[in-house]
Image (cartoon, rainbow, N blue to C red; front, side):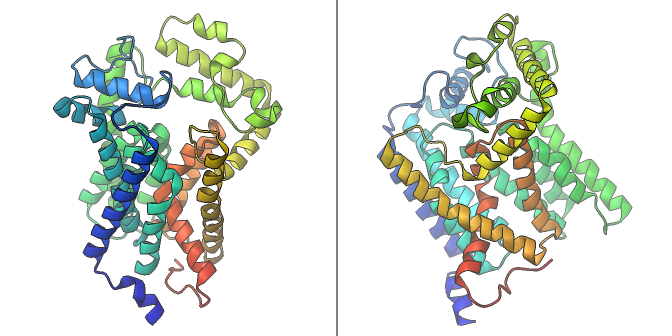
Length: 422
């Protein structure tokens, strides 16, 4: 038992303060190494980071949610630009402060990883999961770039933790807060829309009474969708058509479902810009952003319906690329590629071992299913769109729980008695 107690000498509050400080300083060091913090997003003007920042600056300047052309848009989900806009409204476009914000959000997500992990594994293993999240390379890299994952990761960890706390006997207030948090998470990255029904199944599942299950279903639906509804209403007011979240789904779908992703090896399971795909003239001929999105969806759906066997092959490529693909770095130089390999693939081994332990121990209790369903939603997203490492690494909090279980299984000879069997 002495070996089990050693990692727990620090009180939880002291541990969390230490965890936050180390995570923050490490991310700040990486930012200072890779970026000139006096400059904004380093990507091209068509990149996600550049567009997020332009939207934020325009909102902060009182111009509304408009793109660099000054046109109202729904192409990017609003959660992350609104966060930046709130800061820019107070400070102006202050890029050093933005990087500090990203570092703080990254450190906060490590804290939430610990809180999430301790709901399903022991204190010692939960602290291990938190430390793994501190050093996970892709998570470190998020702090260096203006991407929505900076906000999405802590929101997702917090929302999942609140759901688990409710399932373990918490109040309906926790459930309502979870719905609001995960609704805002969906406004940050629409991927979590799938978690609405998946987690909803857990919330209305026996053995709770019928009345409590119905109440849980209503509260969950109202708060989750209620967080999204104002943005959907805004989209209808702007475009005159129903747009639930964003208008970039079509470009992602068609970009991940076409002949090139099943015939060109370097694009297996990948995504291409629709400017590099057939029928671009049909897309360019559309009159507005919503019609543009609908045409791209149509072209992708037409390809799937005409080539079901190719879509099945593409789905296999996507599922294969999702776990093994390296984090999306913007440099292809050999030293960076080697660093990416060393910083990810050992974690992949640990996550795979942890997943095997979960299967072997039949860890299917509702709290564990919250984590499993999150990974399932990620896999389904990859099958529909493409096997993006960003889809995977946005789940860093959940992934590090599996990695910590895997590391314990690989290093502790005695039975993993601290991992509950149900």
